[in-house]
Amino acid sequence: MNTPAGILLPECVLSSSWLLVMATVVAFNTIIYIGLILSKLIPLPRQFHPGRMRRMLRKINVNPDKDTAADRIPRPEPDETDDPYENMRRGVALRGIPQAFGLAGGLMILMSATAFMSFFGTGFGFELIEFGVGVLFLVIAMVLGRSHVKARTLMWIWAASSAVLVAMMAGQAVLVDSQLPLAYSLMVMVAFAPITLAWRPSLVAAVLMLVSMSTATVLVEGDEDARLIPAALAGLFVSAVLLRLRLTSIAELSDEKESYVALASTDILTGVLSRHGLLTLMPGQVGTAEQLNEAIWVMSIDVEQLGEANKQYGSAYGDDVLRAVAVAIQEHAPPGCLVARWSGDMFLVAWIGGRPNGERIARDIREQILLNGVNLGKWPTPLRIGIAAGYPRTTTFDHLIEEATAYLAAP
Image 1 (cartoon, rainbow, N blue to C red):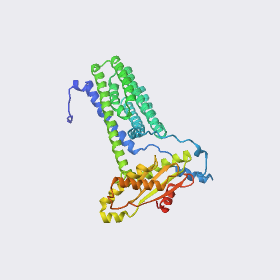
Image 2 (image 1 turned 90 degrees about the vertical axis):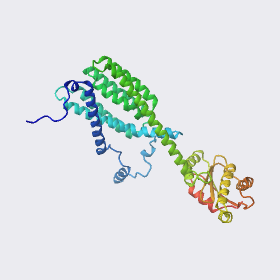
Image 3 (image 1 turned 30 degrees about the horizontal axis):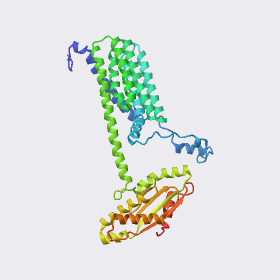
Image 4 (image 1 turned 180 degrees about the horizontal axis):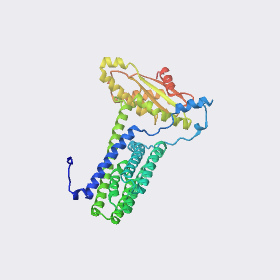
């Protein structure tokens, strides 16, 4: 005779509503893992590769490198601001919200399919609706992932969709007279705000969710009427805390990224731009010069015989001279210019505008160094200056640098 194995529980425990909720949570957790596995095994469709499209066009005697109608299609402006934190937050939302739609859609499809197989033959109206909503979420995920929707719009779309999803579950709870769909609503309430990444749409959606949950709790008969509304409030509070924590982490990452960028773009010794920093900022200067139809000027300032000064007075003295030269250049260079330490003993100054007086700038820099007292009569700090200019449409920044350094004019 075979004896039953496992844990035997009394009937009052097995028939309690809280055991059903716990079983639902376990099943939901299992569905999440299945969804994660499917998201790894079934990648979302990607855009058509441009290289493949070019090869196909060449086969039909169309040269994609020439001016075509596609070249005249206006490109969307990047959704960026001057605030690094805001840019990072929007970037996270642009990547995360379409993925959240895809994951939510896959979970809803799995849940509806599981419910249909479990209650086969008893009617599947709501399961069919849930399946359709899941498919809709997958379509939204693919559309949003491949379109140029602004991050703020994405946040509102996600918050509104979450509120509609909770309202749909509340309506299902009322029609079937069961509190089980409200348990799923609590999960949505906890998870939606950290994905939204914005307070205003999260607060609006939270109010709508609370109204839907409260209405369904009043209309549905059950044993947990007095606990569902406090549970909904607790879920929304946890969601707000998670949102706050995520925004704080994004702010910290943004500050850390900015410090790394500043460190990579700034010369540690002199405090001016580094070579990398100047090359990073020059495309913006070139674009401005092209719009204004102005010339770009590049001036090279070479501190001569710095190696001999280092040998005679030490490298610390040479560092003091470079710092003093950098300060003098910043004070006497044209306004709005970019000052960078291009190499060990050479500085570059780039700006948009008229031709400067190289002799006057060199004289002012030497006088500033004398006033700083950095050389203390040890070394006269000889400087050589070269200047080059050109328009963005006829020359390049690299060519201007070569011209300025090749024709150094003695002051």
